[in-house]
Image 1 (tube, chains in turn orange, red):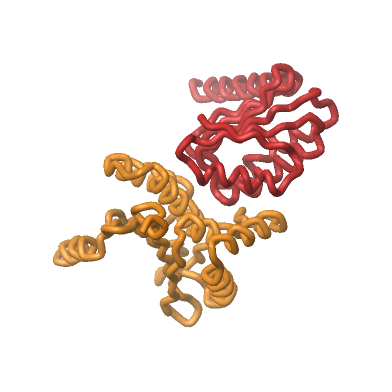
Image 2 (cartoon, rainbow over the protein chains, first blue to last red):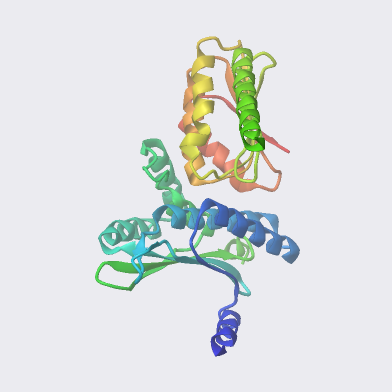
Length: 188
Length: 146
């Protein structure tokens, strides 16, 4: 039973205020959003920041629902198991997600993320407009705008990593930070 | 035979729903109730009400906005002299933003259309989103707060 305590301690050490692990659907997305909204409501956070957190959460959660690759379990059953976390540090919130991806999908993801991280505020705005004008919705219903939108709402670089899982799979980890004090840099 | 009676009732009510839908389409009103992840939509030619409001993060945005695009297609042939189309959104996801652009693009060909883009007074991001849409289509936008 030690792991319960360890998990609890680990959450405190990493300032994690919410974790969901398991299958992700539109229904779980709605439940997590409701729960996080209630948390933020009682924390008295500024409304602009609350909206940005909500915004990034939706994109991160719907990305998992739409793009998390199926993993075959030992018993041959298929699973979409992924993880979603919210961190609350002194100066910022972090929206974090992790989901399995097939290795052949990694180069496309990397290219998109690297491009986004190379752009400043105006560059991201232009990229957003370019994609929305020219894109058609994918089979999965995505517009290809999720990462761009997350980067715009964050105002910081997206943090990401691929953790090796097997010959076929990696675990895609994403962290999106949202500064607590809006425009803190501009005010300084 | 309570079970079969129940089935009959079910079928009866679905027939009446179809009849109501037919009547609504004759009156040219599209009325979609809002939910926690989908916006409220009213498109009413007779009373000149065209409004999308609330939150938009449906699981399948293309499917959700399909009736709106279809309604606008049929409206474009017999539109009112002026169409004040209200967007009063609290939040929309990126998949919805693509469909909102599709709605705006359909409105582009309807003469006399003005977009009334509402945003909450402390929601700069929603205001900016409206400005970006206004740069993507050739329709006059009026920005308002609520």
